[in-house]
Length: 244
Image (cartoon, rainbow, N blue to C red; front, top):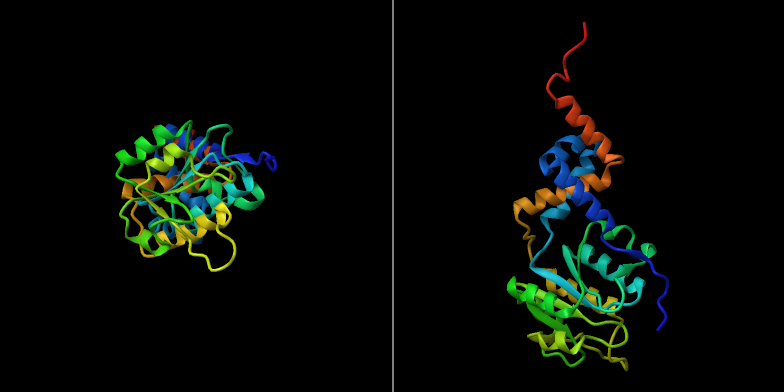
């Protein structure tokens, strides 16, 4: 199957912002940049972060098409899922910018070279893995009652790798009444993420929300490094002394 363009590799903007946050510190970045964001923008960021979830995560196995990758990232943002795990077997995850519409800046994408380390990490954190399958034992509304859910999606041609499927505790189906037996991977994900998240309150801890708030400011304000460096220069010893 031919890949429809390479799209853009996810995570670059976030990684750069995270490096700068480590260099300057979360509190310094917030103090320096808040003044350059409108009150409405600051309120919107806080509102979104208050509803963000770590109790639901999406796992995509060897996704091929950047249009699907972008749609999945966009669905994560739309339904408040903060983290998506991408198992990369033959090629890196890419997203089509025309579809993602900038949402790749707000979602953490954790990239894995194989299924085993991803499985081990999620199991260690208490996630129950649920695969998608036309004959699944669960229906969408059942997902809301799983305390920590890892929703596993396969790729466009081969589905979910057997190793990853074997690690799943359940499978979930989207009920069909037509002749078709399944939906596109991105459509399926949107339906299931909506069902899994609709009754969950935001559950990020305060430290994580503060870090993401600083990152959002960094990604929202033009020339953020210049503003932070200027802020630090103003606060440096002797910076306020006037010459005579």
